[in-house]
Image (cartoon, helix red, strand yellow):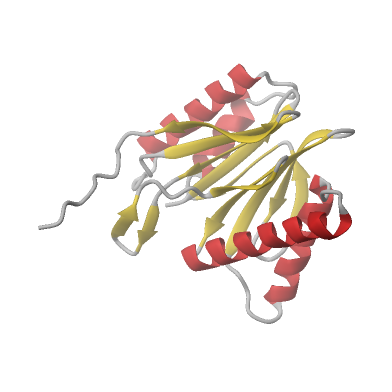
Length: 204
């Protein structure tokens, strides 16, 4: 029951995601970070099949780094989003990846932005977005409470409202979430919202 959602505020963009790694009826771990720091000023939140998600996001990250290494300048957020969309579109006709992406970034001349990219290579620039079963509740909460120019405190309060709603309404709700932000100071982890912790298994 995955959930990835994000929004754009006043001078920053934010992406939050559940941290559950599940297969069928099994929960393998509850601290899987699904929001990748793509480069110094970009975040990539992804949901979908675990293998596709990890392989495709790492592929995008390495190619973004390669572009910066070859050219001496980083990709703009829009360029990274279009590159990601192009690779998904190419794979769609060969060996498709089942992965949905929210790509957030901050550009010096443009400011924060958020891009919605789904598994069939649809690309949209949005102010708020969500994927997964939790999106039914996150999107309704954001429709009600989101407004342009939100402060960081208002945005975090809205994210917490979304998490509470998902935990209370979704039949198999993920217990833990990670929140990351990107602004003029770069991309970084902001907080975790945990209701359970993974216990270490001692050797018998």
